[in-house]
Image 1 (cartoon, rainbow, N blue to C red):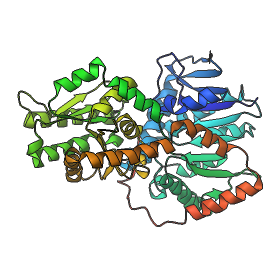
Image 2 (image 1 turned 135 degrees about the vertical axis):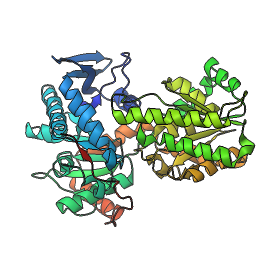
Image 3 (image 1 turned 90 degrees about the vertical axis):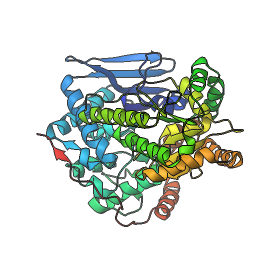
Image 4 (image 1 turned 180 degrees about the vertical axis):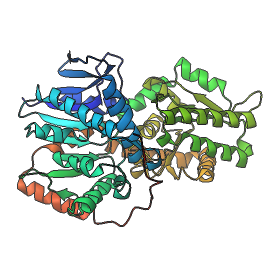
Length: 486
Protein backbone atom coordinates (compact mmCIF):
# COMPACT_ATOMS: atom_id res chain seq x y z
CA UNK A 1 0.00 0.00 0.00
CA UNK A 2 1.36 3.42 -0.94
CA UNK A 3 2.24 5.66 1.97
CA UNK A 4 2.32 9.43 2.25
CA UNK A 5 5.70 10.83 3.27
CA UNK A 6 5.48 14.25 4.92
CA UNK A 7 8.78 16.12 4.97
CA UNK A 8 9.26 19.30 6.99
CA UNK A 9 11.94 21.13 8.91
CA UNK A 10 10.55 19.98 12.28
CA UNK A 11 8.49 16.92 13.16
CA UNK A 12 5.67 16.92 15.72
CA UNK A 13 5.87 13.52 17.39
CA UNK A 14 2.65 12.95 19.41
CA UNK A 15 3.01 13.12 23.19
CA UNK A 16 6.59 14.39 22.95
CA UNK A 17 5.99 18.06 23.74
CA UNK A 18 7.52 18.97 20.37
CA UNK A 19 5.21 21.45 18.62
CA UNK A 20 6.61 23.12 15.48
CA UNK A 21 4.19 26.00 15.09
CA UNK A 22 0.86 25.28 13.45
CA UNK A 23 2.02 22.50 11.14
CA UNK A 24 0.88 19.75 13.50
CA UNK A 25 -2.65 21.17 13.55
CA UNK A 26 -2.68 21.63 9.77
CA UNK A 27 -1.66 18.02 9.13
CA UNK A 28 -3.73 16.37 11.85
CA UNK A 29 -6.54 15.28 9.52
CA UNK A 30 -4.11 13.82 6.97
CA UNK A 31 -2.27 11.87 9.67
CA UNK A 32 -5.59 10.52 10.93
CA UNK A 33 -6.94 9.43 7.53
CA UNK A 34 -3.85 8.00 5.81
CA UNK A 35 -0.82 5.88 6.72
CA UNK A 36 1.93 8.48 6.88
CA UNK A 37 5.63 8.75 7.51
CA UNK A 38 6.75 12.18 8.80
CA UNK A 39 10.46 12.92 8.36
CA UNK A 40 12.45 15.94 9.48
CA UNK A 41 14.73 17.51 12.04
CA UNK A 42 14.46 16.26 15.61
CA UNK A 43 15.22 19.69 17.08
CA UNK A 44 18.48 18.31 18.50
CA UNK A 45 21.95 19.57 17.56
CA UNK A 46 24.77 17.02 17.98
CA UNK A 47 28.32 16.63 16.75
CA UNK A 48 27.42 13.00 15.98
CA UNK A 49 23.85 13.19 14.67
CA UNK A 50 21.55 10.18 14.81
CA UNK A 51 18.32 9.28 13.07
CA UNK A 52 15.49 7.57 14.95
CA UNK A 53 12.14 6.07 13.95
CA UNK A 54 9.20 6.40 16.34
CA UNK A 55 5.95 4.48 15.83
CA UNK A 56 2.70 6.09 16.98
CA UNK A 57 -0.68 4.63 16.06
CA UNK A 58 -0.60 3.96 12.30
CA UNK A 59 2.13 6.50 11.54
CA UNK A 60 5.92 6.60 11.63
CA UNK A 61 8.01 9.61 12.67
CA UNK A 62 11.60 9.70 11.45
CA UNK A 63 13.63 12.37 13.22
CA UNK A 64 17.23 13.22 12.42
CA UNK A 65 19.64 15.46 14.32
CA UNK A 66 21.66 18.30 12.83
CA UNK A 67 25.33 19.06 13.33
CA UNK A 68 26.14 22.46 14.90
CA UNK A 69 27.39 23.83 11.59
CA UNK A 70 24.22 22.59 9.86
CA UNK A 71 22.04 24.40 12.40
CA UNK A 72 24.02 27.63 12.04
CA UNK A 73 24.16 27.63 8.24
CA UNK A 74 20.94 25.91 7.16
CA UNK A 75 18.51 27.07 9.85
CA UNK A 76 19.81 30.25 11.49
CA UNK A 77 21.65 31.15 8.31
CA UNK A 78 20.08 30.72 4.89
CA UNK A 79 16.54 29.78 5.93
CA UNK A 80 16.03 32.54 8.48
CA UNK A 81 18.49 35.24 7.39
CA UNK A 82 17.81 35.06 3.65
CA UNK A 83 14.62 33.22 2.67
CA UNK A 84 12.42 34.37 5.55
CA UNK A 85 13.05 38.13 5.16
CA UNK A 86 13.03 38.08 1.35
CA UNK A 87 9.85 36.03 1.13
CA UNK A 88 8.28 38.56 3.52
CA UNK A 89 9.31 41.45 1.22
CA UNK A 90 12.18 42.59 3.49
CA UNK A 91 15.26 42.68 1.29
CA UNK A 92 16.79 45.21 3.66
CA UNK A 93 17.05 42.54 6.39
CA UNK A 94 18.53 39.72 4.27
CA UNK A 95 22.14 38.68 4.93
CA UNK A 96 23.49 36.33 2.28
CA UNK A 97 26.62 34.18 2.52
CA UNK A 98 27.73 31.34 0.26
CA UNK A 99 28.65 29.32 3.32
CA UNK A 100 25.06 29.43 4.56
CA UNK A 101 23.74 28.50 1.12
CA UNK A 102 26.10 25.50 1.10
CA UNK A 103 24.80 24.44 4.51
CA UNK A 104 21.21 24.80 3.32
CA UNK A 105 21.85 22.56 0.30
CA UNK A 106 23.82 20.10 2.46
CA UNK A 107 20.92 19.60 4.89
CA UNK A 108 18.50 19.12 2.00
CA UNK A 109 20.87 16.44 0.67
CA UNK A 110 20.93 14.84 4.13
CA UNK A 111 17.11 14.70 4.23
CA UNK A 112 17.14 13.19 0.72
CA UNK A 113 19.64 10.51 1.81
CA UNK A 114 17.46 9.57 4.79
CA UNK A 115 14.35 9.50 2.64
CA UNK A 116 15.67 7.20 -0.10
CA UNK A 117 16.43 4.57 2.56
CA UNK A 118 12.73 4.09 3.33
CA UNK A 119 10.78 5.35 0.31
CA UNK A 120 8.92 2.83 -1.84
CA UNK A 121 8.34 3.36 -5.58
CA UNK A 122 4.59 4.02 -5.15
CA UNK A 123 4.87 6.29 -2.12
CA UNK A 124 3.86 9.96 -2.38
CA UNK A 125 6.11 12.70 -0.98
CA UNK A 126 4.68 15.95 0.39
CA UNK A 127 7.32 18.56 1.25
CA UNK A 128 6.55 21.60 3.40
CA UNK A 129 7.91 25.10 3.40
CA UNK A 130 10.87 27.25 2.51
CA UNK A 131 13.46 25.20 4.39
CA UNK A 132 13.23 22.43 1.78
CA UNK A 133 12.81 24.11 -1.60
CA UNK A 134 15.56 22.05 -3.35
CA UNK A 135 14.59 18.69 -1.81
CA UNK A 136 12.82 17.40 -4.93
CA UNK A 137 15.86 18.22 -7.05
CA UNK A 138 18.03 16.23 -4.61
CA UNK A 139 15.60 13.31 -4.80
CA UNK A 140 15.44 13.38 -8.61
CA UNK A 141 19.25 13.36 -8.69
CA UNK A 142 19.08 10.10 -6.74
CA UNK A 143 16.81 8.57 -9.39
CA UNK A 144 13.45 8.86 -7.62
CA UNK A 145 10.42 9.17 -9.89
CA UNK A 146 7.76 9.35 -7.15
CA UNK A 147 5.02 11.95 -7.14
CA UNK A 148 6.45 14.85 -5.09
CA UNK A 149 4.45 17.88 -3.98
CA UNK A 150 5.56 21.08 -2.27
CA UNK A 151 3.53 23.55 -0.22
CA UNK A 152 4.79 26.99 0.79
CA UNK A 153 3.32 28.17 4.09
CA UNK A 154 4.70 31.71 3.82
CA UNK A 155 4.23 34.37 1.11
CA UNK A 156 6.05 34.37 -2.20
CA UNK A 157 7.06 37.86 -3.37
CA UNK A 158 6.97 39.08 -6.97
CA UNK A 159 9.91 38.49 -9.33
CA UNK A 160 11.11 42.07 -8.82
CA UNK A 161 12.01 41.03 -5.27
CA UNK A 162 12.96 37.38 -5.82
CA UNK A 163 15.52 38.25 -8.47
CA UNK A 164 17.45 40.40 -5.99
CA UNK A 165 18.33 37.24 -4.03
CA UNK A 166 21.79 35.89 -4.88
CA UNK A 167 21.55 32.46 -6.54
CA UNK A 168 17.80 32.81 -7.12
CA UNK A 169 18.37 31.53 -10.67
CA UNK A 170 19.43 28.16 -9.21
CA UNK A 171 17.18 27.87 -6.17
CA UNK A 172 13.74 29.05 -7.34
CA UNK A 173 13.69 27.06 -10.63
CA UNK A 174 14.48 23.92 -8.61
CA UNK A 175 10.79 23.96 -7.67
CA UNK A 176 10.29 22.66 -11.20
CA UNK A 177 11.36 19.22 -9.96
CA UNK A 178 8.11 18.94 -8.02
CA UNK A 179 4.94 17.63 -9.62
CA UNK A 180 2.78 20.15 -7.76
CA UNK A 181 3.73 23.44 -6.09
CA UNK A 182 1.05 24.82 -3.78
CA UNK A 183 0.58 28.31 -2.36
CA UNK A 184 -1.69 29.98 0.17
CA UNK A 185 -3.15 32.62 -2.15
CA UNK A 186 -3.78 33.29 -5.82
CA UNK A 187 -1.39 36.24 -5.59
CA UNK A 188 1.49 34.01 -4.45
CA UNK A 189 0.78 31.55 -7.27
CA UNK A 190 0.70 34.41 -9.76
CA UNK A 191 4.04 35.73 -8.46
CA UNK A 192 5.62 32.33 -9.06
CA UNK A 193 4.18 32.09 -12.57
CA UNK A 194 5.47 35.58 -13.34
CA UNK A 195 8.92 34.67 -12.02
CA UNK A 196 9.07 31.61 -14.29
CA UNK A 197 7.85 33.62 -17.26
CA UNK A 198 10.40 36.36 -16.66
CA UNK A 199 13.40 34.18 -15.87
CA UNK A 200 12.77 30.99 -17.86
CA UNK A 201 10.53 32.23 -20.65
CA UNK A 202 7.69 29.88 -19.77
CA UNK A 203 4.09 30.79 -20.64
CA UNK A 204 2.81 33.34 -18.16
CA UNK A 205 -0.13 31.23 -17.04
CA UNK A 206 0.26 28.53 -14.38
CA UNK A 207 0.09 25.36 -16.45
CA UNK A 208 3.57 24.54 -17.68
CA UNK A 209 6.13 21.79 -18.06
CA UNK A 210 9.56 21.93 -16.51
CA UNK A 211 12.27 19.32 -16.20
CA UNK A 212 12.85 16.39 -18.52
CA UNK A 213 10.53 13.94 -20.23
CA UNK A 214 6.78 14.14 -19.84
CA UNK A 215 6.64 15.03 -16.16
CA UNK A 216 4.66 18.23 -15.62
CA UNK A 217 5.05 20.69 -12.77
CA UNK A 218 1.73 22.32 -11.89
CA UNK A 219 0.87 25.22 -9.62
CA UNK A 220 -2.15 25.44 -7.34
CA UNK A 221 -3.70 27.53 -4.57
CA UNK A 222 -4.62 25.72 -1.35
CA UNK A 223 -5.52 28.20 1.44
CA UNK A 224 -5.00 26.66 4.87
CA UNK A 225 -7.95 26.59 7.27
CA UNK A 226 -8.63 25.46 10.83
CA UNK A 227 -10.84 22.89 12.56
CA UNK A 228 -13.70 25.36 12.65
CA UNK A 229 -16.44 23.61 14.62
CA UNK A 230 -13.98 21.98 17.02
CA UNK A 231 -12.33 25.30 17.81
CA UNK A 232 -15.70 26.98 18.28
CA UNK A 233 -16.76 24.34 20.82
CA UNK A 234 -13.39 24.60 22.56
CA UNK A 235 -13.75 28.37 22.89
CA UNK A 236 -17.25 28.04 24.33
CA UNK A 237 -15.91 25.81 27.10
CA UNK A 238 -12.63 27.64 27.65
CA UNK A 239 -14.14 31.04 28.35
CA UNK A 240 -15.46 29.59 31.59
CA UNK A 241 -12.03 28.50 32.82
CA UNK A 242 -10.49 30.13 35.87
CA UNK A 243 -7.64 31.74 33.93
CA UNK A 244 -9.88 33.46 31.37
CA UNK A 245 -12.32 34.62 34.04
CA UNK A 246 -9.44 36.06 36.08
CA UNK A 247 -8.29 38.05 33.06
CA UNK A 248 -11.78 39.41 32.45
CA UNK A 249 -12.30 40.35 36.09
CA UNK A 250 -8.94 42.13 36.21
CA UNK A 251 -9.60 44.58 33.36
CA UNK A 252 -12.10 47.40 33.09
CA UNK A 253 -14.19 47.52 29.96
CA UNK A 254 -13.57 45.52 26.80
CA UNK A 255 -10.66 43.27 25.83
CA UNK A 256 -8.76 43.64 22.54
CA UNK A 257 -6.33 40.81 21.76
CA UNK A 258 -3.33 40.22 19.51
CA UNK A 259 -1.42 36.92 19.40
CA UNK A 260 1.79 36.69 17.38
CA UNK A 261 5.27 35.25 17.46
CA UNK A 262 7.91 37.91 18.02
CA UNK A 263 8.74 38.50 14.36
CA UNK A 264 9.16 41.61 12.25
CA UNK A 265 6.65 40.28 9.72
CA UNK A 266 3.88 40.54 12.34
CA UNK A 267 3.97 44.33 12.60
CA UNK A 268 3.71 44.45 16.41
CA UNK A 269 5.50 47.78 16.85
CA UNK A 270 3.40 49.36 14.10
CA UNK A 271 0.28 47.93 15.79
CA UNK A 272 1.25 49.51 19.10
CA UNK A 273 1.82 52.81 17.32
CA UNK A 274 -1.69 52.52 15.86
CA UNK A 275 -3.17 51.82 19.30
CA UNK A 276 -1.36 54.86 20.63
CA UNK A 277 -2.93 56.96 17.86
CA UNK A 278 -6.33 55.53 18.82
CA UNK A 279 -5.86 56.52 22.47
CA UNK A 280 -4.80 60.03 21.46
CA UNK A 281 -7.68 60.53 19.00
CA UNK A 282 -10.49 58.87 21.02
CA UNK A 283 -10.07 59.80 24.69
CA UNK A 284 -13.66 58.70 25.38
CA UNK A 285 -12.38 55.10 25.29
CA UNK A 286 -9.79 55.59 28.03
CA UNK A 287 -10.40 53.10 30.80
CA UNK A 288 -12.88 51.17 28.64
CA UNK A 289 -10.50 49.02 26.56
CA UNK A 290 -7.44 46.94 27.41
CA UNK A 291 -5.13 45.64 24.69
CA UNK A 292 -3.62 42.22 25.52
CA UNK A 293 -0.69 41.37 23.24
CA UNK A 294 0.58 37.80 23.67
CA UNK A 295 3.97 37.43 21.98
CA UNK A 296 6.12 34.36 22.67
CA UNK A 297 9.79 34.97 21.95
CA UNK A 298 11.16 33.62 18.67
CA UNK A 299 14.66 33.11 17.23
CA UNK A 300 16.22 35.07 20.08
CA UNK A 301 19.75 34.23 18.90
CA UNK A 302 19.24 36.39 15.78
CA UNK A 303 20.09 40.05 16.37
CA UNK A 304 17.10 41.48 14.51
CA UNK A 305 14.74 39.62 16.84
CA UNK A 306 16.52 40.83 19.98
CA UNK A 307 16.32 44.40 18.67
CA UNK A 308 12.65 43.96 17.89
CA UNK A 309 11.93 42.66 21.40
CA UNK A 310 13.51 45.79 22.85
CA UNK A 311 11.45 48.01 20.49
CA UNK A 312 8.16 46.32 21.42
CA UNK A 313 8.94 46.54 25.15
CA UNK A 314 9.75 50.21 24.73
CA UNK A 315 6.53 50.97 22.82
CA UNK A 316 4.34 49.16 25.37
CA UNK A 317 6.08 50.97 28.22
CA UNK A 318 5.71 54.33 26.51
CA UNK A 319 1.96 53.86 26.02
CA UNK A 320 1.38 52.71 29.58
CA UNK A 321 3.51 55.54 30.92
CA UNK A 322 1.50 58.12 28.98
CA UNK A 323 -2.04 56.83 29.51
CA UNK A 324 -2.22 54.57 32.59
CA UNK A 325 -3.88 55.53 35.84
CA UNK A 326 -4.19 53.74 39.16
CA UNK A 327 -7.09 51.58 37.95
CA UNK A 328 -6.23 50.99 34.29
CA UNK A 329 -3.26 50.14 32.09
CA UNK A 330 -4.05 50.31 28.36
CA UNK A 331 -1.53 47.60 27.34
CA UNK A 332 -0.74 44.19 28.74
CA UNK A 333 2.25 42.72 26.96
CA UNK A 334 3.01 39.05 27.70
CA UNK A 335 6.14 37.22 26.50
CA UNK A 336 5.01 33.64 26.98
CA UNK A 337 3.11 30.97 25.10
CA UNK A 338 -0.40 29.83 26.02
CA UNK A 339 -2.16 26.58 25.16
CA UNK A 340 -4.69 26.54 22.34
CA UNK A 341 -7.37 25.94 24.98
CA UNK A 342 -6.44 29.09 26.87
CA UNK A 343 -6.16 31.13 23.67
CA UNK A 344 -9.56 29.90 22.49
CA UNK A 345 -11.16 31.25 25.65
CA UNK A 346 -9.32 34.57 25.42
CA UNK A 347 -10.34 34.97 21.77
CA UNK A 348 -13.99 34.41 22.65
CA UNK A 349 -13.76 36.96 25.46
CA UNK A 350 -12.18 39.64 23.24
CA UNK A 351 -14.39 42.34 21.74
CA UNK A 352 -11.73 43.05 19.10
CA UNK A 353 -9.17 40.78 17.42
CA UNK A 354 -6.23 42.82 16.11
CA UNK A 355 -4.36 40.89 13.40
CA UNK A 356 -2.19 43.31 11.43
CA UNK A 357 0.92 41.63 9.99
CA UNK A 358 3.00 43.59 7.50
CA UNK A 359 2.98 40.42 5.35
CA UNK A 360 1.77 36.91 6.14
CA UNK A 361 1.23 33.66 4.28
CA UNK A 362 -2.21 33.05 5.80
CA UNK A 363 -2.46 33.89 9.52
CA UNK A 364 -4.49 31.29 11.36
CA UNK A 365 -4.94 33.55 14.40
CA UNK A 366 -7.47 35.52 12.35
CA UNK A 367 -9.39 32.34 11.56
CA UNK A 368 -9.25 31.08 15.14
CA UNK A 369 -10.51 34.41 16.44
CA UNK A 370 -13.56 34.24 14.14
CA UNK A 371 -14.26 30.59 15.00
CA UNK A 372 -14.07 31.36 18.73
CA UNK A 373 -16.75 34.06 18.75
CA UNK A 374 -20.21 33.76 20.30
CA UNK A 375 -22.51 34.16 17.25
CA UNK A 376 -25.06 35.98 19.42
CA UNK A 377 -22.55 38.58 20.61
CA UNK A 378 -19.46 38.32 18.39
CA UNK A 379 -16.34 40.44 18.44
CA UNK A 380 -14.88 42.25 15.45
CA UNK A 381 -11.81 41.16 13.47
CA UNK A 382 -9.43 43.89 12.30
CA UNK A 383 -7.23 42.30 9.66
CA UNK A 384 -4.25 43.44 7.60
CA UNK A 385 -4.93 43.45 3.88
CA UNK A 386 -1.45 41.90 3.50
CA UNK A 387 -2.36 38.71 5.42
CA UNK A 388 -3.28 35.76 3.21
CA UNK A 389 -6.52 35.40 5.16
CA UNK A 390 -7.67 38.77 3.76
CA UNK A 391 -8.35 37.08 0.41
CA UNK A 392 -11.15 35.10 2.09
CA UNK A 393 -12.17 37.46 4.90
CA UNK A 394 -13.62 40.39 3.01
CA UNK A 395 -16.11 40.97 5.85
CA UNK A 396 -13.39 41.73 8.38
CA UNK A 397 -12.32 45.35 8.87
CA UNK A 398 -9.42 45.31 6.40
CA UNK A 399 -6.65 47.81 7.13
CA UNK A 400 -3.28 48.93 5.84
CA UNK A 401 -0.82 48.18 8.69
CA UNK A 402 1.51 50.88 7.37
CA UNK A 403 -1.15 53.52 8.16
CA UNK A 404 -1.41 53.81 11.98
CA UNK A 405 -4.16 56.45 11.85
CA UNK A 406 -6.35 54.16 9.72
CA UNK A 407 -5.76 51.21 12.07
CA UNK A 408 -6.58 53.44 15.04
CA UNK A 409 -9.81 54.50 13.35
CA UNK A 410 -10.66 50.84 12.71
CA UNK A 411 -10.26 50.12 16.44
CA UNK A 412 -12.73 52.91 17.20
CA UNK A 413 -15.14 51.59 14.59
CA UNK A 414 -14.91 48.05 15.97
CA UNK A 415 -15.56 49.22 19.52
CA UNK A 416 -18.63 51.22 18.47
CA UNK A 417 -20.03 48.71 15.95
CA UNK A 418 -23.72 47.85 16.51
CA UNK A 419 -24.64 44.29 17.43
CA UNK A 420 -26.58 43.69 14.20
CA UNK A 421 -23.57 44.56 12.05
CA UNK A 422 -21.24 42.48 14.21
CA UNK A 423 -23.53 39.46 13.89
CA UNK A 424 -23.84 39.79 10.11
CA UNK A 425 -20.09 40.16 9.59
CA UNK A 426 -19.37 37.21 11.85
CA UNK A 427 -21.96 35.00 10.13
CA UNK A 428 -20.38 35.66 6.74
CA UNK A 429 -16.83 35.07 8.04
CA UNK A 430 -17.86 31.85 9.80
CA UNK A 431 -19.51 30.53 6.63
CA UNK A 432 -16.25 31.16 4.79
CA UNK A 433 -14.36 29.20 7.45
CA UNK A 434 -16.66 26.21 7.02
CA UNK A 435 -16.16 26.22 3.25
CA UNK A 436 -12.40 25.89 3.71
CA UNK A 437 -12.19 23.74 6.83
CA UNK A 438 -8.79 22.16 7.45
CA UNK A 439 -10.34 18.68 7.43
CA UNK A 440 -10.55 18.97 3.63
CA UNK A 441 -7.23 20.69 2.99
CA UNK A 442 -4.81 17.74 2.93
CA UNK A 443 -7.08 15.61 0.75
CA UNK A 444 -7.51 18.53 -1.66
CA UNK A 445 -3.75 18.86 -2.08
CA UNK A 446 -3.13 15.11 -2.35
CA UNK A 447 -5.90 14.72 -4.92
CA UNK A 448 -4.29 17.45 -7.02
CA UNK A 449 -0.91 15.71 -6.66
CA UNK A 450 -2.28 12.40 -7.96
CA UNK A 451 -1.57 11.57 -11.64
CA UNK A 452 -4.11 13.06 -14.07
CA UNK A 453 -5.46 11.58 -17.28
CA UNK A 454 -4.95 13.64 -20.43
CA UNK A 455 -8.53 14.93 -20.58
CA UNK A 456 -8.42 16.18 -16.99
CA UNK A 457 -5.03 17.76 -17.56
CA UNK A 458 -6.35 19.60 -20.63
CA UNK A 459 -9.37 20.93 -18.72
CA UNK A 460 -7.14 22.04 -15.87
CA UNK A 461 -4.70 23.74 -18.22
CA UNK A 462 -7.49 25.79 -19.81
CA UNK A 463 -8.92 26.75 -16.41
CA UNK A 464 -5.52 27.87 -15.19
CA UNK A 465 -4.84 29.84 -18.37
CA UNK A 466 -8.11 31.67 -17.77
CA UNK A 467 -7.18 32.19 -14.13
CA UNK A 468 -3.86 34.03 -14.44
CA UNK A 469 -3.01 36.33 -17.32
CA UNK A 470 0.26 38.25 -17.63
CA UNK A 471 0.37 41.05 -15.08
CA UNK A 472 2.20 44.34 -14.88
CA UNK A 473 5.07 45.25 -12.59
CA UNK A 474 4.63 44.73 -8.85
CA UNK A 475 3.66 47.84 -6.94
CA UNK A 476 5.85 47.10 -3.91
CA UNK A 477 9.46 48.04 -4.54
CA UNK A 478 12.32 46.28 -2.75
CA UNK A 479 13.70 48.25 0.19
CA UNK A 480 17.28 47.66 -1.01
CA UNK A 481 19.71 44.89 -1.86
CA UNK A 482 20.48 42.23 0.75
CA UNK A 483 23.65 42.72 2.69
CA UNK A 484 26.41 40.14 2.28
CA UNK A 485 28.18 38.37 5.11
CA UNK A 486 31.56 36.86 4.32
